[in-house]
Length: 396
Ligand code: F3S
Image 1 (cartoon, helix red, strand yellow):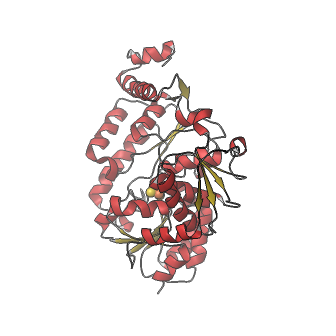
Image 2 (cartoon, protein in one colour):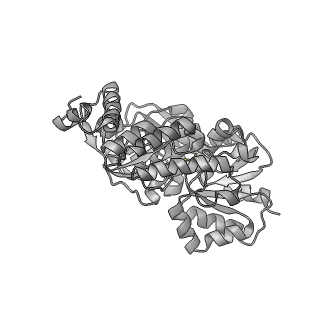
């Protein structure tokens, strides 16, 4: 890699041992992937936040960095934590888990990281612009920012994102470069996708088929941002799709509309139906946990409308960012959901929280991504359906 004099000096230890170690990690990554230089990033999103994911070794690693008074160089947000940082007691999170989660958040705060723990940072105060270079970790946030916004990020790991935050740069390879954004496969959507869970089911099916290739979609005539985030999240979970273009909808699609010669895959109603059947491994949910990826204000409003005046006989939680929860409180949506017996849960989600430790065995979700991860990460059986069907199951 070509490094500037200042960058060479960091490797020589001029800026202290943490900078040296973090910068070395970025250089190593750049060398592996053939980057020629470092590029500045506008923002970072760091994953590896839940105590469930990083345990005591990860907690001590973060505390060590924080104790050396290292500060991030750019706007940096966090992926969801393992619990709601304010309401963990009333939601039943274990006290020992909470103690460790608080240590992790304290360490991040010490580093100057914004303690907004969400996989939808673009809805919560960290919105990149078109073509801006960023270093984000969470796969659905990566997919959304690359595809729907047209910002540029690789799928960073927790350590490489933290290194980018502390150094303010990332190696220039992959999705940062024009050639990394060219479609490699066409997906023709013939299925009639209506609900967000339909988009999640289709995404799960497509991710399995295309793996990590860049997609050019045809046939999606209309989709709102919630549906695109559901689609992208599922494709990133079942495959490793980090960038897709949708004809007529996403900002770079026009530039890549010449897809002659590419393999084309067709998604039909029968594929979506088969995916619902495959992902349904449970029957009676102990809990319905929505908000994967973290819910937008519109999704919280829709849930409020769905449960308004009803009585829920099982917990119904919807995960979102703290910022979005506060907006939902002001609009009265939280009150309506709580009156029915549900909860709006901030800072965390069904996959990174210790659901299995909290006694839940079967979780109802409307997310293809959550349905993909819950069996492995949380030992859950899954009921996968759209929100009206899920709520119908648990209304008294
Ligand atoms: Fe977000 Fe958790 Fe889903 S991080 S995308 S809500 S698994």
